Image (cartoon, rainbow, N blue to C red):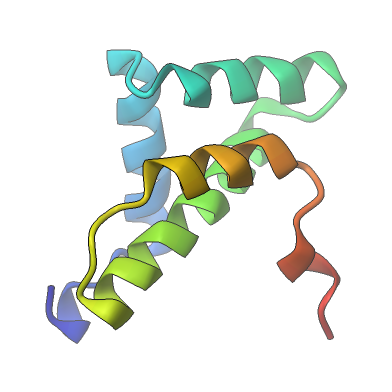
Length: 88
């Protein structure tokens, strides 16, 4: 993936919506349900999930690696609190 091909925030949200529509990975739908059930508005929850996705996309681009589903799942589990949110 070239630098000019890095996904925008809008593209990440669209990808999350596609994951939800396809039910793959199921962890995305479970995370959305968990966040909404605990009071997070749907749109905000989708954006949080997109942030977790962005970590993987960035790593793939930066390291020319492969998508790490295990780490993505762990980041979804950490929502709404993720380490990077508290950094200054």
